[in-house]
Image (cartoon, rainbow, N blue to C red; front, side, top):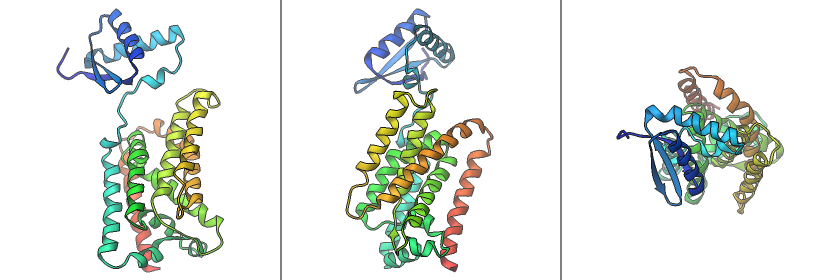
Length: 291
């Protein structure tokens, strides 16, 4: 085997790994196994990867084994390899620290927070800028963890440009819908709406991978996602409606986004989406300044 084998299967249980190794051995395909905790990774030479994949898929197809898609991953979606997610986390942290260093935190919240009263008067930019403001360190750390757990894997799946764009879109729509729900001076800040949007998008991704949307394997991610929203919407100052709307927007948009994203293969897709996202952010800040 070469010194640089490629991962063919990632994170397999012991029984499934043994079965696949047996299939590959019967075809005289050399393999290497790496263990991580109780899970196993199967590696092969780059030249044998396509043949190995075809052989395993044929075996599962002929023997009618379900859920092959769970075992096969062409790439890792580890959150710790998503550079855009870490850049977003750094941006959120920098904004919060600057607001504390200069005594402008309350003024920034009043000027750029998602206020139902002012949004209904036309200040729609607040639905965007509110995503980058946080009440305190605990609020910020909670959302940073959410971005690492949900946002980073989604960006890895979607792309470095379309990923941040969809997170911004779901968070913005969630804040706008929350503003439409209230008719008072309701004020909301924080990236949690986008975090819940990422959870909804990941749920939609799991469901769109399956050919039958109403099977048990596709309904389980939805139940898990809805339960997660409920668990993460506890707390005295939590904006539950923003969480719910964020998740629903991500879930519904995901059914359109993922099939469409797979069909668009232009090399300009990701840079253009990232540019549009940056321009939207800049225009939102400027709208608040010149309002």
